[in-house]
Amino acid sequence: MTELRTPELLIECAAAHPDEATAIGEARPATAAAADNDIDAVADAMNEEEERERARDREYWAPLRAELEELRRQRGR
Image (tube, rainbow, N blue to C red; front, side):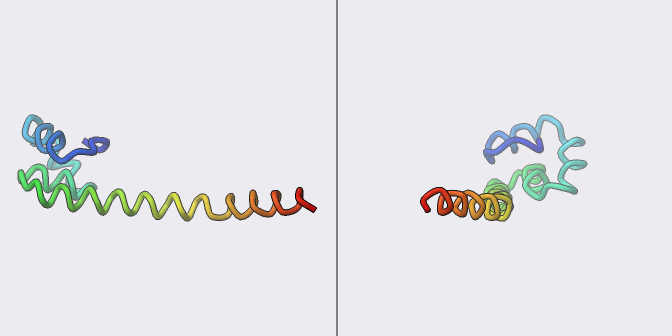
């Protein structure tokens, strides 16, 4: 339930395993919403998860991209 990325599948899984969904829902709001069978809240929570992950990716790659850019500039001299 921590890896499902579509609201429909998460809701289906949460319905099949309600105890696990409740336990996981404490750490993952999308799973908590799925346990409540609220597809709109699941979709919203998943969108927020995705945006947080994208922000972490940008933060991770920024210094590496800068380093590559500097190497490219040095090579061009």
